[in-house]
Image 1 (tube, rainbow, N blue to C red):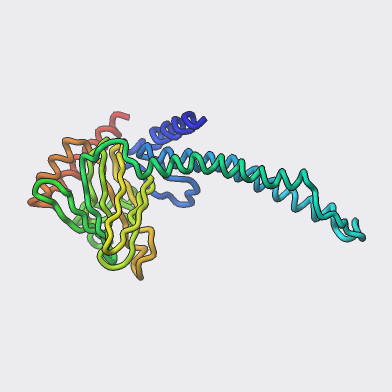
Image 2: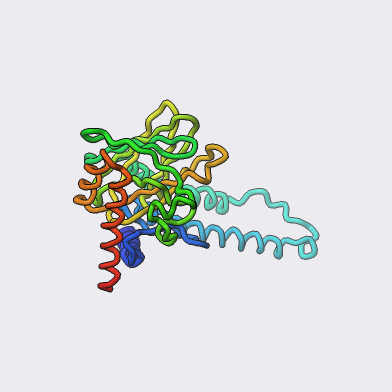
Length: 288
């Protein structure tokens, strides 16, 4: 059943990826964003799995409450029952919850273990440092690349070439995205300079606190090219709502070209990469 749900989630991801710009929050959205990593598919599976317990329990409790209200109302039972013990009922409400908790705990612990156990060695390491209210990224490669990523101001959209809000949504678009190659194990070292922040990317299934004086570690392996959005998920001050995270996943060749150029000219490298991605998307759209 788990494999079936996971494969169903993968198929939904593929169908939802008509645009190479991946997924992003939508108005009145009630479910998860389309997963872009195997870890997020596992999280989505576990969320669906728990609903098989939550819904029946909720319905059962509601039925019992209504039954008791009607059956044992004062007008129907002027003399209340003085029954204080029922062995069968006590066994059921003790053993039942234990079995349910075991059914939830075992896959929960397995998922938690998987989240902290990368299946392979990281090929790329990036350090993300939270500030009030932006992010510093440092690529730990030869000739280290460091830059700041902050929310894109509305007046800067034209200059940055990010006027299309369907791709660069309000309050989520940034001036400099974190760029990573597709299908590459990426380690993210997370810390902060002032207060506690949180590095969260829903489509990747990652969320980890950024704590001053401490370095936490998370990882992801994006399986689909595109532009993904997250936010700081820890209340961190007055501009907490304006601290987005944007990760652009590109091909390995595009990443290497971008990284080499970004070390000397980050704005130029970003514009060149955007032009390449936009061109590919137009060709793909014309083919459809």
